[in-house]
Amino acid sequence: MAKANRLVLPLFLPLMWSLHSWALSADIQAAKGEGMRLYNIGYSTAAMPYLRQAADTGDVESMYYMGESERRQKMMGFTTAAMEWYLKAAEQGDPYAMLRLFQGGACIGGCPERSAC
Image 1 (spheres, one colour):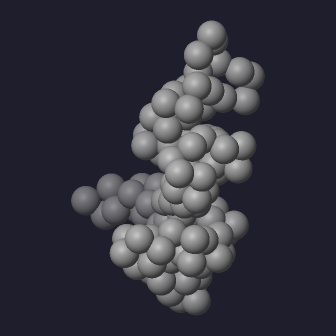
Image 2: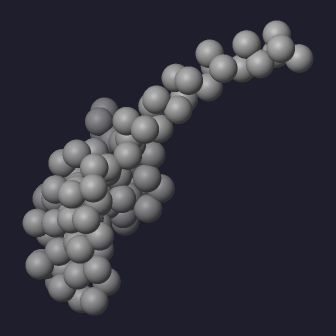
């Protein structure tokens, strides 16, 4: 039993460290929270500076909502800026961003080299 515990600990330490490194700092988490609040009550333009803070630190959900905010600004049109945010999120594995890329025509006629389709 003690030998098993000695084997498990080295396997879980890197995982615990990596999960901790992905956590957002308190100020970035607060900015994301405010951005999500504003987005959800219909103020997507006002949400963008807050969401950008979290997206710039690598938060995938914020990247997706930056794309959604860009799309809302253009009356639900797929702009280059929106597609770029969706691509960033899709490259990190976000399935909703992948769907938006497909809906925006990024995957029609074969996937481009940098696509997450």
